[in-house]
Each structure stands twice: as structure tokens, then as C-alpha cells.
Image (cartoon, rainbow, N blue to C red; front, side):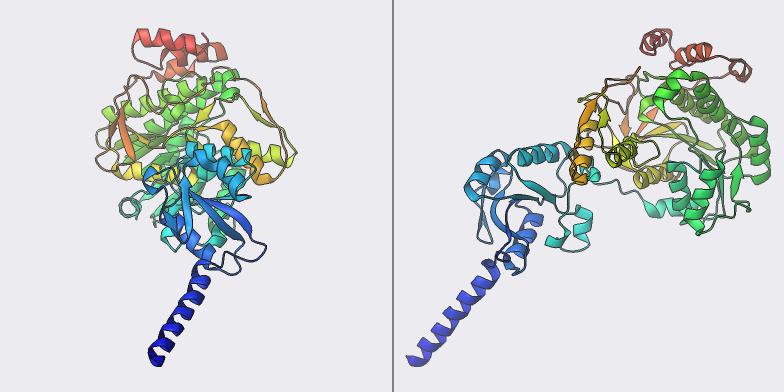
Length: 499
């Protein structure tokens, strides 16, 4: 009896100590009381670490989850109280000061809604890293961070077929126009990793070429054959370059892209985005290029601006070349705003924050599709590998994001009290951009589930006619008339472009 009682007593004492250590630590004495949103795998991992650590910064006191099936669950001794609607009530009940978001795949609009509710209740919001980061290792409490702009994408970044891209690019002579720009320079960096036979970087901006060469080689002598200083407006130079260098794959990233500026100077859009693309297509056919990828924009779908019209016509020119030159592959790639690209809303907001604000947004309801620079460049490379001649490929970019939400997130990250000023929509600017034109019937690509395919009607351009346009009013009129092939569509679009 004594032996049995001793063993039983030892087991009970050990169980009490172990239970206290595993489920009752609750962080250090001065740990913040925190609520956790998310009762899935990420939430369970986070709560387990917080409860079992004696030096944790946070003491979890309640869990929230929108999944009704998880109501009244108990995780590591902490109860799930309900969905986001219970947030304010639970704050008053528990005295929590922080909300820990443990749902890495939370859509952007849901993330913003929960953040707004939490801030209204006086909570500081932190999030776990993305699901990809968690897959490389278990979620840890020290990885909690502020909400950043990438979280607003509301989707996992597209993962394209690297093996397929590598097999297509390896050993090829590749030329990138606009190589000094945000997209062009990242394209060059990614292409160089796939061991091409030769990478030719073409740009009219010598500073841009210097920067991209420096980023790739840690030095920029600008004395090699890899950098080409030329303008895509110069037809004769392009023909000589293509004849001499014989590129097999061309990525056309050179373009004028600032919408408000092009509204005032439509002739410049015509010369660069239309004629420049035409000259490149002409040189590509004459030199025997195998693949030509034209980089477009979502503003080419139902265009309402000079920028959108010029890029729509560039898509149509590429489609026309695919009909004329059956020996090569000509494709266009269309995507939305690129986070962090030169002149993007992100860089504008960051500068305004550095200068103490205010942040300027055109309208509280304006939203845009966003993607990261590496994601955009992978899409372009994938298009070269899987695109069918004459197609325009569009990436699935999830739901659009309100520009005002981006501004609020950056202000919160800065820790400053800054004002947002709404300036009103600019000339011919849309409240919401579209990925597809009303005249298009998109279909999911059979070669990649994140890509959709559309067919843009080709256009036959008379070069001499366009080259003879020498003033902005005639340039605007020509762009308006050549966006669509049908007369009714032209008339409708003319009104939208301010004719």
C-alpha cells in the first residue's frame, strides 16, 4: 500500500508541475494581455508557444475565429469566444491590449476590417508571417510583426513553374528593352540566374543601365556588350542592333507609364508606346526572333486614358504580328500596379511620410490590383515559356485593394500621426481598374491555373501615317480611333477619352 501510494503521489505531483509548465506559464510577469484571432494551425502553434514560454511578451487571454464550427473550443486552456463581432466585448471582458492575427491567408479586405475593429477597440495589431514562411518552419512568437502592404494582397504570391522557365531561357540570346526601369531591371536579374547565352540590356537612360549593371555585377563599367544605349523610337538603330546581335527572345518593358503626364502629352505616348512597339516588332521579324513578349497593363482593358489606349494598341500590334509572322511567338502580358516600382503609389506615400505628410489619395473608393515586382517578372518569364502565339496573358491578382487602405497601413507602420487628404479623381482616371475588356472572353490557361488567356483583335498600322502625326490633339484623336476595331466601340471610347 505504501509503495503504491508513493508512486501515485509522485505521478500526481509530476503532473501538476508539468501542467503548470506547459499550460500555465502565460509569459513573464509583465507580459501584455493579448487576444489571438485564428484557431487554425497557425493559431494553435502560436498559443502553444506563448503558453509554454516563461519569457513570452504576450499572455493569451482569449481566442476569436469567424469559423462557427470552432466556437467554444479550448486550445491550451484558452477558449474560443466567437468571431470578429465579439472583439470589442472580449476586450472589455479581458482587458487585452494587443490582437495577434494568426491567419496568414486572410483576404485583404477581411484583414483591413479586423484591423479597423481592433484599432477602434484600442488594440495594437500584430500578424504572423505568411504561410510560405510558416511552411519552412513552425510559427514562432518572435516572428510577429506589424501589418505591411504585402499583407493587403489578400492572396499567396503566384508561384510559377521555375523549371519550365529555366528550360526555355537557358542558352538563349535574350534582349530586354527598358532594362533600367523597375520591371526591366528585375527581369534582367531573374533572367541572369537561368544562364542565358547572352543577356542584352537596352535602355535610353544611361543612369538606369548603370544601376541595373551595378545590382547584378557589383560593378558598373558600362563598357561591355551587355548594355545597349538606344531609344525604341529610333527605328534605324533598332534594325541595326537586331541585325547585328540576333536576339532569340525579346522582353519589351520599355514604355511611358505615368497617366496624368500622358494626358497632357499624348504625342509622346504615341511615339513610345505605339510606334516604339511597332519598330521593335518589325525588327524582331526581320532578325528572326523566336519569342517576343510585350509587357502591358490593366489600363489596356476598357481604356479611358491616353496611357490605356496606347497600351491597348500595343497589344493589338503584337497580336497583328502573330498573324503575319507564323515562325515566331508573339504574346502580351497584362497585370496591375506593381508594389515598389518607380513612381508607384507606394514610393509616393513613403516620400510623403518622410516629409511629415499629408498623404494624398484621389478618392476614398479608388482601388487597384497589386502585385510584387518579382511576381510580375515571373509572370513575364512564364508567358515566354507557355504563351500561345497571339495571346494576351493575365495573372489572377485576387481582389483589388483600396489605395486609402494602403495609405492607412503605411501611416500605422511609420508610428506617426499623419493626415490623408483626398484630392479628387484625375482626368480620365477610373475608380476601379479592370483586368479584362468588355469585348474579351477570358479562359483559364491549361498550362497554369494562375493565368488567364484572352485574344485581342489585331490592327494593321500604316507606319508613315502615324509618323506624320506631329501634334498632341491629332495624336489623341488617332489613339481614340484605333483602340477598337468597330465604329460603335470607337464612338463610345471617344467620349471616355475626352474627345
